[in-house]
Image (cartoon, rainbow, N blue to C red; front, side, top):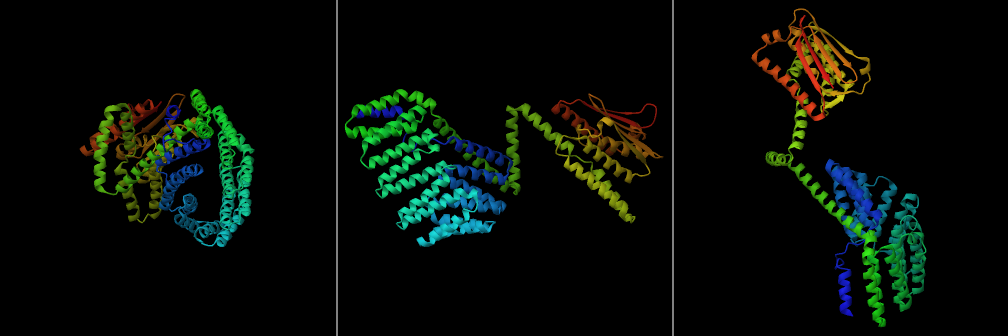
Length: 595
């Protein structure tokens, strides 16, 4: 029979080796953990330290609710380290208190006391300071009376706010521990009952722990009838009846109490009931526990047939049982979630190392070499994606180019105004210049900006050039009615270089004052931009420029053509530009069409 049983156990429970089973998780906790990990992943990706700390706290809370206090402590320490780094005092107060509670549940009294003290130092309100100070006294005092006083003060504090019910329940439980030290069992039971009433409607898991603590207290004092009554009471609660897995566990615990009274008959009935519910509802682990306990009872009574029979029954129902057991799936998902947390932690640590090394020149050189190698290898496998990315990088670089001569000439103009004691003109020029620079910088991150924003930049630019070359040209901007207040998006700073060419290479070489006209039109399919000047024209301008100036101007136009090609390629646009001398009069006409 023992051989058969061993074979059955190995057949049925190959995945339940010592320490190897992943215990069933509450689906609510699993969902909460997955949400927290998702938040952590985004925070690590964006290097958002505050959200990283909040995610670690959420993860720690879930571990705490599963009574995995060491893992809770581990994640809270990470959150604490981040809050210290960003000097978030409110966050430090919160995480230090949670950390103290996790350490207290591991009997790390000194570390817990230190964190309660830290929470007190960083608490923003007088009540929070007092609450943490009382918990510090509770852990560090050797006098039960002093402990009791500190706990009672916290009960008074936590009773003032309804949201502190969880803390209040913990206070009553702590007070019960002191009562037990004082050998006052009735008062300990009374305080445990208070804690149970607070938690049973909102925190059933904590309520079950309190009930178990009270039942164990009765058993230790040989008050078995009260222990049985207490366990039967919790079996009647709605939160137990609605959760079959919890119900099975409570029935098993009640059976254990009957076994301590030597009432094996009642224990056997309860365990058979627990087994039946576990099979029906798909709780594999709890069915196994019931079988093992029943097997011990059957063997003790010499009922070998029953022992073998229940194993055979379980084996026949195992496939269907496993298919219904959501806890096994949840356990696997929880394990994967934990692995993801570890992976994110590795990624976070790697990011921190990179940030620290960025101040070292050697690191930059080494990183550049590594990135180049990665770039080449990556290009071999993902050419298309890399081409697109390179185009975006190139487009960004082209977009951010500013004409250094424009900046230097602008500053020279300011210098000239100052030299002539023309402070008003200098101030006006500087104001417009800084506004233009600010607009350029703000919009340099995007490939397309709003029409109104681009129009404002062009107005500022022309106003600056008008101040600089006041006697050389006048200008006019015409905007079609259907473009005013429009949400049309256009490439930023694509038009400005053409205006600059008109002014610097055409209008400023005229003997008389010239005129520049900027027109915006729009129909259903395209936006048309016209830049019309009466300068000296393209050919005459080339003749007057030096070789260096011709090269510079050629590079400027090449920049524009490259930007247009990249925009067309990346965004499926059809942007065209034509630049030509006007046939019947002096000047140049530029027509830019954006489809």
